[in-house]
Amino acid sequence: MSPALEAHPQDNSVVAAIGSAVTTLDPADSVDAMTRNVGKSIFESLVVFDESLDVRPQLAESWVISEDGRTYEFRLRAGVRFHDGSILDARAVKLSFERLLDKKNALKRREVFSFIERVETTDDPLSVRFVLKSPTSSFLAKLATGSAAIICPSAIEQWDKGRPETLACGTGPFRFKRFVPGEVFEVVRNTDYRIKELPKLDRITWLVVPENHTRATMLRTGEADFVFPVPFEEKRMLLKSPSVRLEVVPGVQARFLTMNMLAPPLDDLRVRQAIAYAIDKAALARVAFGGDARAAEGVLPEAIPGALRLGPWPFDRERAKALLREAGYAVAKGVQGKRLTLPLWSAYPDATSSRVLQFLQQQLRAVGIDTKLRLLESGERSALVTGNKVPARAPNRLYYTGWSNSASEPDWGLRPIFDSRKWPPVLQNTAYYSNPEVDRLLDEALAETDEAKRSTLYDTLQHTIWSDVPAVFLVYENAASGRRTGLEAFDVYANADFDFVRAYWRKNAQP
Image 1 (spheres, rainbow, N blue to C red):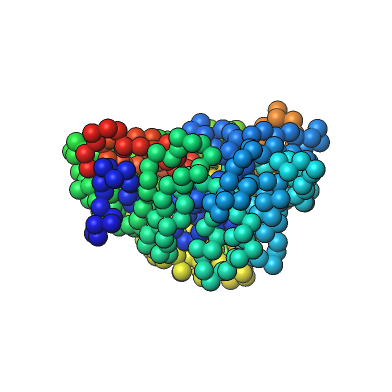
Image 2 (cartoon, rainbow, N blue to C red):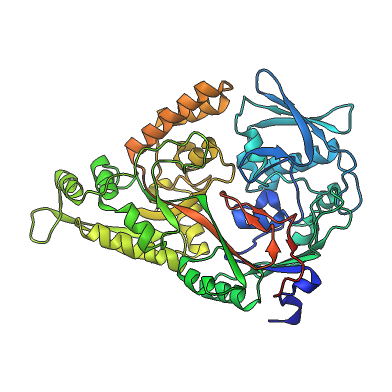
């Protein structure tokens, strides 16, 4: 490792080793949580999540919502400067959102905010108004994800898709230093940050280190000061080190097995139910995740407001076999009927996902279902599954994947996965699930301004999806991070959001 990347608290810098790539410097074009997390070094939004996953002000100091729920007027903080020295005002906010919403720009996060009808400035340069097409109860939460971060007007005017660094200008605590896609992203302290005593670090170097053992070793040896995620198989080694501290919080990362309902035999409810009964979710959490996950007890993780505890779906091999026999399939060799064989794919090629697939294969074989395993690289995932444009030709059948609800509210935990209008390539409904009642309830709940009525609608939604079994809800992963002793306030929330603006090295800390 080069001297520039060595971990030295004495020079007030941090090397953060992360498990997945930083793919872009454009918050409006980022589909992965890690990229948006790291982007928060440079960019800020009108609102942000706190450690309790409640929405709190960031660039906006307050807001007013109209009685009909269609208009939000934000009061911006005064005197906030972009990295180029220009002042944050309503015009800058409007320009950022108009760029995001313009279909010609083809930005990946446009779909998240397609409910916005228009953005208006007023006579007050610090007041900006959003008019929505219909009441949207998740608006504030979606703003807090980082996808709608405010970019310098000058950067937007000079925007060059071939040069991602042209957009690296915001109001955030750090300024852009360098970016090598898929390898490193380096930022330095913004000396003109709006909060005078922050940030406390002078530099953060985000290193992409996909290999689990390498990432953990870097933390133990001091080549890295912070790592995320910490794989469970490396925990024992790290816990032996007095210079390392591990932090684990119950996360909202859901892992599940979608079943392509357009393709026989997965269009048969009995087969989908049989697969759900065949899998021991608690054992999966122990075996594949080393206890760093909990058996899924519903459609939404318990940390999401309004989540219902509906399960886990019972582990019952005899019930699974009975359903398969009823559907016409053999459950043992020599028994009348055709034995079922299905492709079993993972959206991820990492070691944990490999363990998950092997566990699922064993569990399904025990009830008479044979599987052919495949771990997809990111390019394969896009070409075969998430980028597929012809649903009837989608090759996925059993598909192990996940969803991290970045908005930490019910709509964004349900709509991308179960709305029939969100089949690939729009979003992540890889089960090709279609229930008109679910679509209707999603829209009704999103537009409902009465909290009690909205809660009832989401209850009905969760019960309906659970009964239709478009997916086997497997586990919720914990968010596990590690840091060097002496590094304080470099935190990870339940939704895997990073909070590092207040991070600092404790005096006399040693690397």
